[in-house]
Image (cartoon, rainbow, N blue to C red; front, side):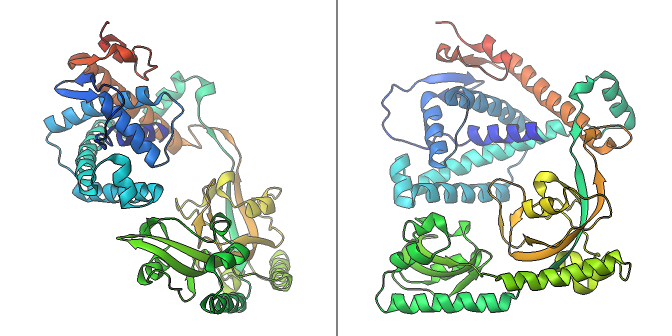
Length: 464
């Protein structure tokens, strides 16, 4: 739910304050008071510094946005303490670990973090742990408020449909239900060829050639290749486990054996290690498949397609006997979204090659053979699908759900979720409006021009 995500993001922003003890170039002052809690100008400046350290940005006025987030979160926290909620310590430690990894990776190690924030690392951990404990209580309080909204009944949904502007009804995008038969190229031969190339490069490095020079020439990781393969100081948690394990086992200046990850095959040279962080160079090479590999797979798939179209075998039986994709072969080739488990795909959830293959097909039709990828790999940077290993496939369109405005008959679950979300958002809004009215709150006039999301704050701004 988009608006719930906004709430969670606000909480994250609100409780990452008090991170720095440096000397400020401004006079610190209290800019807001919520009950007995004061919010200072340094709190806001610290959080801006903290967000910058994680590469975060905002389209809104940062100080106004952060102040409102902190004030809202303090209202939730006050109520959580009244309700005697308890901290989820496992969640706190997980969030703290992720926070430390992000900051140390972005800034390049412990020394840089301490220098940037002006505090020793143990002090930052203590501060951030307290903030995440507060966040845990705040999130639980928020969830407790939303849980007061029951599941929607058919009557609730019909009432919603009777009162809502038809132009505001959700539009259900076109969805596809698909099945596939997949064949992999000769990965053993391709993997062997890559290993032989990397062994040759490793021998050249051991004989005196520079790792960085060979990385610039041969590495297939464009981001690091231009830097001589250097990755920069980063937490081991951001890499594939096989890569991290190999790097952490190396002494600085030594060269790894060949390491395999879902990205391909690597040679690694560790430059520096500090705790759970390391800086390393690597040379990445990926298995390369020939046109002969492709044509061999296409010939097999085309033959299977012909047999299915001639009713000599069913698609489901062909998938069970011939498909090499373990995730779909056992259920007759039926595809499902690996992140949601849904059997239906929206367009942006499909890999481009898959969509191009089926976009002009009707229900029951089967695509020509196409080159695509499996789901054993890295999440795509801009789309909700995984870029995995090369495979070849034919795809059958099992069902097409056309794009349409949501209706009671066809989309009850989606409409029920929409109604419930609206009511939950209103419950949160009502809670905050009530607490802002009841709680002693003062806001410094320096924030009088802020475009706060909630108009109720305006009455709490003091006059000059």
